[in-house]
Image (cartoon, rainbow over all chains, first blue to last red):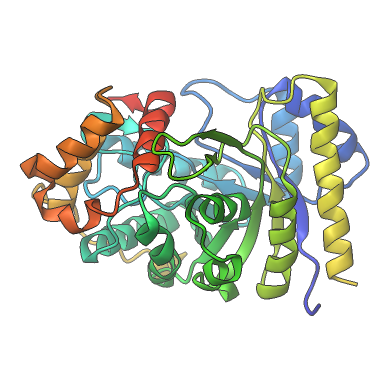
Length: 293
Length: 78
């Protein structure tokens, strides 16, 4: 394997279970980067001191990644909420040094809804134009490299097949990067039966700068068309299939700089779940070491 | 960075937008609490979705059900 080994890090959750689960990883110096969803704290609230200490420490070490959740990049109309969001992001990135900033593909702000989980858009000229404009605004607000995360959700197979090329067109506008979320890829493989290599190769793999790994869950298929529907719920251990995808992605993507393990706060309240999270981190460490010998 | 900051001087979002109308109507529908079957029916018959029929006909019922659950769990109204 050519290239430098990516830094392995964690998506920081400002919750007690995350703190308990990860304290020994941080103490042992095994966490090389953290990612912070800077827009998820409720307005007016501040992170606990231990959380702020981590943010400041990793920021100083040039190992803090910004990850937006609520911008709604592909909304057709710019809302007052989005303008406020961009202003807050500008302030955050001026106050704290981040390596780069990412956001999700999709839209969640329209009509009566201010924000929520991103949904797929029709990939047409208007979506492309609006998305490029918003990415420029995001880059302007953060003053750092910006990228997009592939979406797990798809209304149908066409959304799955076309997302990679569409993201490539979007990020090309700002010389941006792809944040390749492997659990999101796994959801699409499980739900739509697309071959893994075919799906991965539909993305601009040379532009992948960051990988995400997480677990998820299964829900009932209302149509009976499939055994179950894979969901990107970030509330369980990383499945073996996602580790397999990580090993494959490390071979296919020559420019990965960061690998981030994610799990939602308050989903590992029991000690065995916290151990499971550390075990996932250890498994990914081994995959990286094996891939970069 | 400076090369990214060439933003349009005026608001780039005109009030009239086919895509915007579709997005407004879709989120309103998904958050309405009606069943996944009812949503699929409305998507096919409501004139607000007429311009996107080619796209909508590919919608998978399971994924429409997931979208409804996502709206119920995460969506915040204005």
